[in-house]
Amino acid sequence: MSEQPTLSHNELHAWDRDHFFHPSTHMAQHARGDTPNRIIAGGEGVYITDIDGKRSLDAFAGLYCVNVGYGRTKISDAIAHQASQLPYYHAYVGHASEPSIRLAKMVIDRAPEHMSRVFFGLSGSDANETNIKLVWYINNVLGRPEKKKIISRWRGYHGSGVMTGSLTGLAAFHNLFDLPRAPVLHTEAPYFYRREDRSLTEEQFSQFCADKLEEMILAEGPETIAAFIGEPVLGTGGIVPPPAGYWPKIQAILDKYDIILIADEVVTAFGRLGSMFGSDHYGMKPDLITIAKGLTSAYAPLSGVIVSEKLWRILEQGSDTFGPIGHGWTYSSHPLCTAAGVANLEVVDELDLVNNAREVGAYFCQSLADAVGGHRNVGDVRGEGLLASVEFVRDRDDRVFFDASEKVGPRISAALLGQGVIGRAMPQGDILGFAPPLCLTREEADIVVAATVKAIDEVAATL
Ligand code: PMP
Image 1 (cartoon, protein in one colour):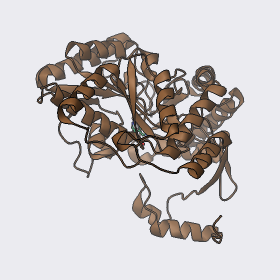
Image 2 (cartoon, rainbow, N blue to C red):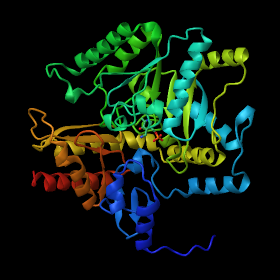
Image 3 (cartoon, rainbow, N blue to C red):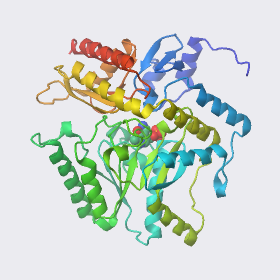
Image 4 (cartoon, rainbow, N blue to C red):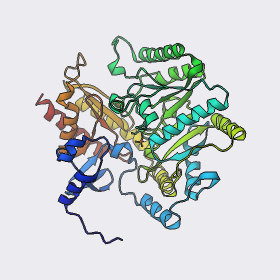
């Protein structure tokens, strides 16, 4: 171990303010010390502890990623063992390491039936960049170079890169960055609660979304549309499960116009919805699936693109004609990360976490709806598996938003933290999100619900 002197808390905060550029943070406020600068020191089960010794129940699993919970030594031991054997070797020109091969097999064994290969990256964003490049490559191989546009949805989240930030359908990720860039188009979000025509049933609203998509495809020309990307459940855009019938109706339109479906399962893969994959959960038939977070439970950074047998054949054809594919990252299938992935998926199986997510998730969503669904400032409570959200409104009947300057969502999330529970104020709208580790127990779910009731009451009293 290196002999570094321990930093005082004051030094930590000062060095952080002066040198650390944080993602998604108000830079000026942070530099002035006006934003919380919570420094996390440890975690065990569903709890994290900061340097002041304060414990919080992490009901957002970091950024919906620590699916197996904190402190799983099986995974940290696997990383340490791999580091001592072989910390790194690349995967270019056919090289591999044992954990990467093992993990590829484990992923395909769990993936929907028609999937055949997995490409590893490091983040959800880079995996979606890979997806788009594969789609373009494939259409070039097939001799249809004009079929390149990608359709995503308003409120979708697919990353923060130039292309993936363009796919993302949230203004905060576009403004001042000159995004979105062509050739990305955004269509209707399947946001039933916020549908304009309130007379529509879920099935009718799903049909409305499918019709909107078809209109866009026809207006642009089907011969120009390459792919459609969507999360099985909208995540960062507000945690919004799809209305009944949505995915089968979308899938039918995509099949009709020969458009590839990319299922962005960065949040949903490996159990979050109570099924191994969200695609199976909703009957989607993607040819590309993005995976990340739950692949290693964030014990090490790792993402992947799962490719269907059908597209794999075209990729093979492409390399037979044009040579090796010119795409890859230095850290593609990094052995430390894939070793973490193998151990993580073993823990998911050993603890039966997919079934736990289904059972405790159903209990949690119901308890949350029972406890806060009738509150005058709660417009909607929704969820699937261990992914849930509560949307706050000034007026329940008219679904009137609070003014953004009132910061109702962030204040409720801060009040919840005061109660010892972490939930996330989602970036657009006053929405409190929950995505706890998949090992959550019913007792822990009760703690989250009780704290949420208190947090909402505390803030509502000031409105
Ligand atoms: N896709 C989805 C659905 C996500 O939720 C996220 C991250 N929250 C990403 C892609 C991007 O992943 P990353 O932050 O690892 O780049």
